[in-house]
Image (tube, rainbow over all chains, first blue to last red; front, side, top):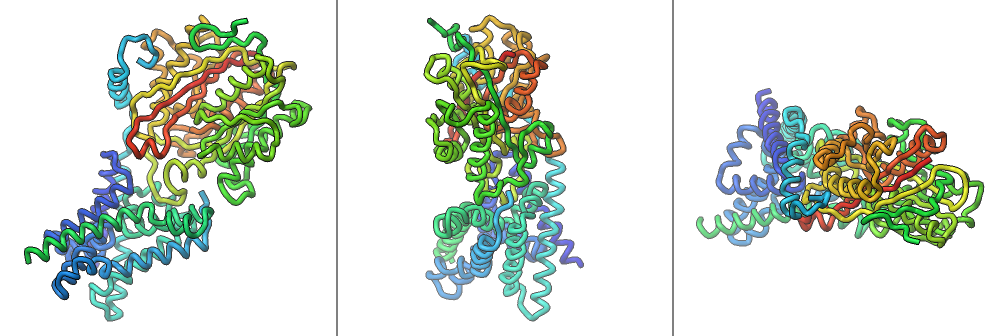
Length: 117
Length: 154
Length: 334
């Protein structure tokens, strides 16, 4: 139960930050998504995001900064394993499941549905 | 000024008008928006936790469970976008349904559906990355830069 | 004979008659404040077509054909069609004109196009170049969303300033002879840039252009605002309306008593249109569906329609340019 509450709170708070950025600055949703991925990546590189994941579980991995964290932590892990080539191969390897799922389901949905407006 | 009588220059007028506009500009209902962003964003993440817990119960490690968990969430987001529900949710929830990975999936599915009428190559194939593309580009560049720094200093 | 009056105003020597008008609207518009005042309400935004764009084009064509048939004549009696819309390269108007098969002039004045097409159509007639013209515009919420903003199924939140593009079309037939309200005076607007950059703030961005045109109209004609039963702006929305009253007040002109914005006459509050309606069809539906019948029955005697257009594009917005705007005024008197 504790895990679910933490996921709710941490995930909710990350979304609140996004909402405040959209309401109080001229940033568009697309800008917020890009900013969050980059920020998540930087925090991950500084070792600040993993503690958040341990605390919030899916609350930290499901929001977009979690995507940035997956890219960076995957890169670092791959560098540890296979050296320099990891700089280029680690990111996509770690996020392959999500990215591929998004592309495939995106295409399927486009085939199956029409926009309702 | 616009009602041009030569009293003010164009730039002065624009400055004056911007200030006047700011006085009457309606503010977004921040408290309400923040509340819904928190609740909906929190619930989507809780659903993520439920799915993740299920995959872990099947014997996957927490790390291994991350991929399938996001895939299920992405599938659900694609389905609800297709059914025309996700945009209604987004109107209320704002960042609550934009920031989670489901929002990322919505940003791929919505243009893919919308531009089907322009064909599968230049329509669906090209437009599906109109928002997700920048996210992937800058996410990967961040990862490479941090990776380079890590490799140099480790 | 000089038909120019003052700086920017045309005083038609032989004012053309508004012989007939027609409107067609989307389902949301049909349930709004003007419920029951449209000639036809669509069951859905596609109108049996396979794209939003074709649906919009269909509405424009239907509106023109219906207005023409109401004059008792046929399309062959129409010397020229003047029409425009919001889509790139005037897709809706051009595709409608392809089927209508009459001489055609495409106009782009963004949401000011209804007033622009009436102004020019009347000039063609008064100049002796035509005896009957059709002026028409269309806009479509979903077609405009995908071109100017986001795909329709994207889950974004609309800011309180945002306006809702009207799905619909309005057409009017202007004629040299006949019975009906007449287009007597028109004021051609200048492009005015208020310096605003937020594409959600279209109404406020257009307000100084509307103020400029209204002020010159009053100067050129020597009229007072109360000369008109009602002064209508096209789609300034809630915020733009407030600002226009203020801007005019500062010029010593009080319009609060008989001024309304078409953008606030289309949707009910609970339809959640935020700051109001926008689009070419905002002024067209109010003019052709609401004001025209009142002018015909004599319940309105004098109407000033100020079409307001925001002349930005997705390119200009992404290149961080401010929003230029224009407003044209047409006076219709029964």
